[in-house]
Length: 96
Image (cartoon, rainbow, N blue to C red; front, top):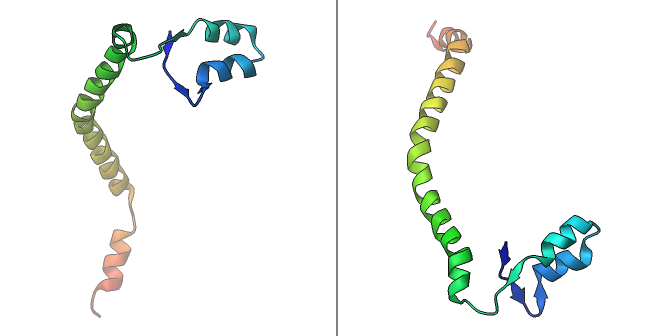
């Protein structure tokens, strides 16, 4: 696993190592790779994950929104069938 974040000498990796009480977490934090610059290995290890995530998140709304719209429509219709307020309200609003 790789990690690229070293801001003003503070890194998430260093914080994990210093604050972890768990030996398992400390061992995993020590295995994180550190990149000094955006070199080719960084793009191979991390860059593709960013691009793949971006591409997936680009198309997910177009795939799931029609199903969510249909679900919300069915739930709204189901709730409307159970609604009993409309008939009494119609009677109250009629002219005498």
